[in-house]
Image (cartoon, rainbow over the protein chains, first blue to last red):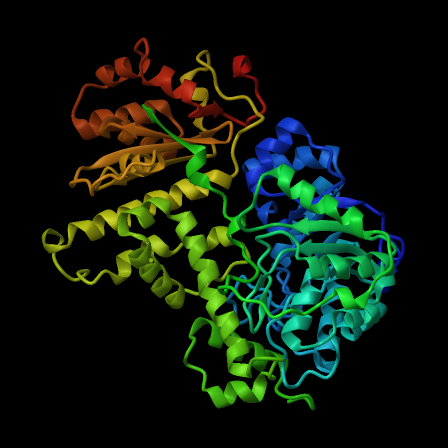
Length: 318
Length: 281
């Protein structure tokens, strides 16, 4: 029974503070400096199959910091069967690193045996809700822990959708006991693209179920915004974070920086800016939707998951 | 069909097809499925996903084959990779699998594949060789290895020596390892002429070492990998190269010989498991 998992972490999740994504380019710095960061989020797929250095690194990191596992390939909304080989590896990894929680996205990544390596949008209908509820229950039973589900960034909505995303996630959480990950940048991006109010989105969100929040940078392309994770958090998103921080009662907050990744110190300084937005009255007037401009960039970048293997090779005489 | 519209399975199949084969979905069909956004019509919204799909995975392909990308130039490499991904859309949840079928695809689709070997384009052979080598190097990075456990030392008897798990051999028509490492150094090497090369890849301390081998070394290690026996390996070299077994044995055991060098490079662990200490097996 899936609801048996309710209440383990989702009703009173630990307030982990301000964390960073565990990225390949920062491994050497982290292992040599052991920086004073509150916690790390590791991309599950970057470690679950690893027999090499990434697995070695996450074991050491997990001994010293709280770690959560964040997936990009669970494909909870796909009409393909759940991948139990994937889930098995995820469970083994979780047993090793003992994450505070495991999260993934409200999306699908592929179908018919193909994988887009993107976080694709779902039609938000009663049929989809029933489908996702069933699959979240199966996943939670398999992993023996609640799943934390994130709102994705989206660039389209389906004509057949009948449920708003906050309502969909609230009902999903009600039915399965899953927790929620509120990505504040995704709220801003999706709402700009859909022409809806991001503050109203957060007001409607089941913030009492939020275990974690995400922050990230985005690329404004004029007619739409792309979720690029390749630059600092925009001012409007920070303002929105002020509301989200209050509504979630200070949920664990993590900065995602996945493209043009700067030094660890710069990433850390960026997430520490969140402290400026933990107090003070939220003024919706400060969350603007300005017209922007700029070249289109790749959404949901994944190339940071591909290790720079060439740098770990050497030619020797036999 | 649900009351909301087409079933989820059909909708997802439709969208996946639209990502892999952009331009094949009629606009009026898109407009029925995808709602207008605040500023874009449904076709323009879908196009954001279509553009990002290829840009995203092509960037990953370039990062998995940096030397081949250098050899071909980014534009031509991207053309090949795009056609590959169109023919073989990603199947796995892991990006590490993305380039698995690329060397085979290049070999299968070469335009001169039906020509006699002597009439084939040399640069295509080189490209396939280099892709094969780069894929192997990429796999080595995260394959199960022997770090954290003892490797075999010089005192280990031959009948206890086994190749370690993160080890691979390759035979190529071109000096692809040389080319790869020239690119790694930031150089711009010329396409090398045809020259058979033999390579061992071995990972120790999470560093993948490329070792250039002689033909006899390659025969030896291939036989050792197949049989697990040094004596079989010595016999194989003697038989294939028509040399006395004692000469091979002498070369194996010589001061600063291959046995000593390969043990130092981390080729070997002790038979049974990785748990035995160096001195204990």
